[in-house]
Amino acid sequence: MAADPSQTADPPQTADTVGPVEVTRERIAEFADAIGDPNPAYRCPEAARALGHTDVIAPPTFAVRLAAQAEALVLARHPLGHDYTSAVHLSQDYRHLRPIRSGDVLTAEARLVQAREAMDGALATVEVEVTAADGPVTVSTARVLSRERRTPYEALAEFVGRDDFVCLGAKAAVRRESLVHHHCGELGGEEGAAHTLTRLTEFLAAFEPSPRSFTSFVATFDSLPDITEETFEERVWRHLQTMHDEDSRHHAWSDLYDSDPASRRFAFSVAGHPLFVVGLHPGASRPSRRFGMPALVFNSHLQFNALGRDFFKLRKKIRQRDHTFHGSANPSLLTYRDEARHYSGRMTEPEWSCPFTPRQSPSVP
Image 1 (cartoon, rainbow, N blue to C red):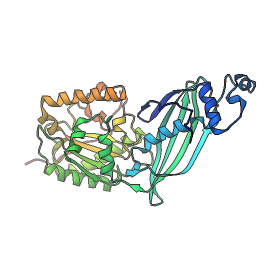
Image 2: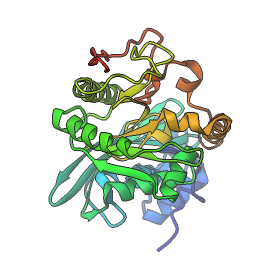
Image 3: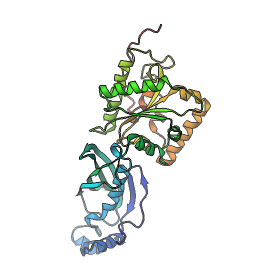
């Protein structure tokens, strides 16, 4: 099979974006030859101008490979824990908004629209928008079915093991097999919150912080029908509130941290243990938060404290890695010091108010 002349080499990739790719007359002509389309508007500027175009235009399928590369980045995160390497494309729709022209510089950006259990497998819907300087030129929507199941932990371990995953503590936990995982059903649901609380309480009962310890508890959840950052944030705090409402019946808040989420000394508390919560989900804007299923990572503040000065060295390295791989450190961490703003991963507005209410704890004997 002849090589695809729409691109002479793989374009650069950032997160779920592929490009930029410059469109030239030569590439368009080579692509038209490869698909056997004799249309003179694909080769002759005068013929293209006679049709009202400013220069040579490309066949409508010119951007297909670019869109497919962006789509593959989404599927590589294994939505719902499935492997899409040998998946079946049930449908692939394209909307061409304007012809691609010589001189365009194209970028393809993909997003996971939906992932759900279907037909004894996982059905993922991925949308890719191919844009030029003046806006979108092509939008593709693919429905992809996979029956190759991966466990949530396998998907999580692969996600953390990627070269561009920035958290060195999580990498160490996976490497040492000290990442404790449970799948807990629905994020924000009462049963899912109860399951998370039970398993997390069991984990904390056996937890011992150490300067050499990189141990975290991770709860993964079923796919959400809406994967926007706002929806995920609402679900996260609903989940944490439900957990706290039950936990507060039996345990006081950690006496080392505040229960007021507006405080810079706030930390979430379970069984009297202070925790920093990291939310992961498919719609996250930060690449290291963009995992194929909703998840909450519970990290112990006592573990952070046990690291002493090494904690600040580790944090500095993580931010440097974020800048190296993704162009910048997480702006939320640089802008705000109050911890609650960072849990969902969304860059919150200055006037944002945390939707969490600490309950009256039982009296401590």
